[in-house]
Image (cartoon, rainbow, N blue to C red; front, top):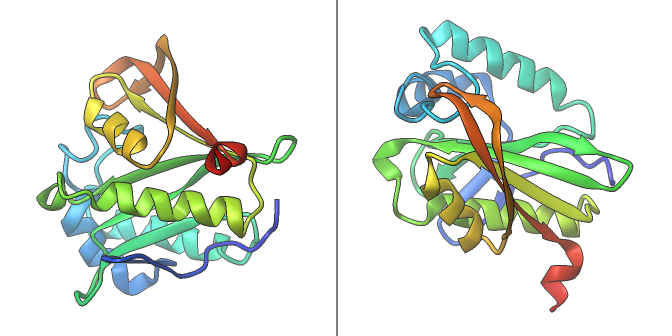
Length: 184
């Protein structure tokens, strides 16, 4: 893996960039405090904007390392983040990364997260030198699987009652794409 960290990425409709402290209020308002956004995630909704400031402060300190990948998602032409996407785990032994993401529910169903996911997958393969990029979702959230498929990932399987989200113990559905898959 190339330790290049989080760099700005642009797509047709989005800007992906490192988080800044100024993002806290928009992050809190747009998705971090929303129990519907976090229903199938592993972290609790933020109770206060101070919770959000705390996590952004942690992320900013991690940006100094070259192995931390976490982007704020912005719509071009609009100020403030609408979601986040980042690498939640890395396995250096096989150059593999697992991605997690979430977005304001006001923007669900517009293909924005698939667009962001495709861009991050490209970045991880082309710039960071990854061999495998994976993601997983609570089986009760099939729309997340649709995001993964639209981004070019392949369903790999479901592990029964192997995870826990805010909705409780859950089956986890796994998707991945290999660098070699993109050359087919």
